[in-house]
View 1 (cartoon, rainbow, N blue to C red):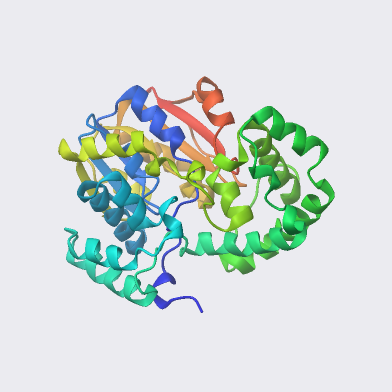
View 2 (cartoon, helix red, strand yellow):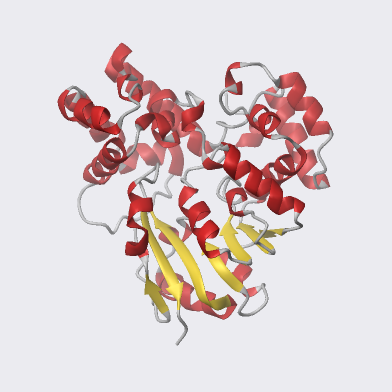
Length: 367
């Protein structure tokens, strides 16, 4: 039975590889960042000593609470305790319930956040919440079907440490017939509606079938980076992160140290319970130099879809970078004042660990 308090948490681990934004922020060193919050895992890697203000935006208060929990645990814990608290490998195999409860009691959280997670962890008996979001639970179901289809050989593609060997296996020994059948059954609108979207499935505007969209994305994953290092492939085949090679960027030591340094340096983290456009309009004019929009605009329609980029403009500093992910649907928007610089980052995009999103990177150049 799904726990009561998880009914409003869509994401707990996260659905995007924030390595892209992490590397962009390292390079351009923005001062003022606005980002969709999600599970917080797409927020915290943007923290560094160079950042002055980080605006975390979400229409869901629980997603802002889990973002706050991530921020405060980074601030308060060392690297290994952070991994243990959240349940990342290699600590996932152990019962840290007692330690998790003791850590939580000492965290300096807002009253609302603390109250919310006291109820959540209470229902979970202080087990890890890393896989308890709606999205993560959906892929736990997907993984069970994968394992049923492939049997004891389901994890073979995760055993490679060399990409060329993995590609050879994929092209010659991977059961393509089973894989295509599986994607045909699961990779369609009705199944994802039933498992995750509850009737709000996105309106696709990209060419080709749902099957071809998913097949091509998975093929890119299998042939451009090691499967064992993709948190998304781990979720799809195991329903969890099977080893620390698959840990998301927040659970990598270099990133953790960078985040902790930024928080120690006094970055101002703001939690904004609002829609994207309203949040951008609430910040000082011309101040933002980096925006990470997730795939939120994929769900826009009508005037909002057409005009949202123009409505963001007053908040942007000239030269600001806007990162947009699109899932099945690329917004048809007025891009006046923006230049598409995506090709500059083709190498980063090729090794992105999800590959389900069409990523566009824009620079704001003004009139």
